[in-house]
Image 1 (spheres, rainbow, N blue to C red):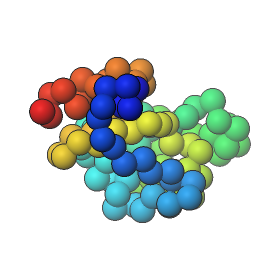
Image 2: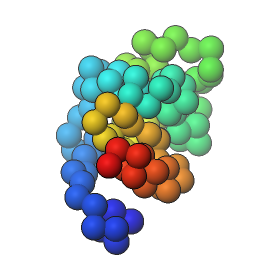
Image 3: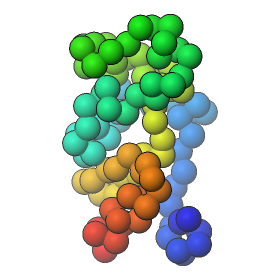
Length: 99
């Protein structure tokens, strides 16, 4: 979608380039989201860890760093704002508002 709209972007694969705790906290703050809101609840590891909304935020952040497949994606960051781009049109809205 970005290529189709001639929007330059940097793609980060968190499986290859590990997400740091500071970066994850920064993205959450920019997106105004709690850690539980960015979990992929259909993932096997989510079920195995028996996670719930009542889980401690710091614990969830550490688990997301340890198990990046728990993280919903894509997360699009533009300046001081970020959005969980599901659906992807949310990313375009963010980009348009930043221009």
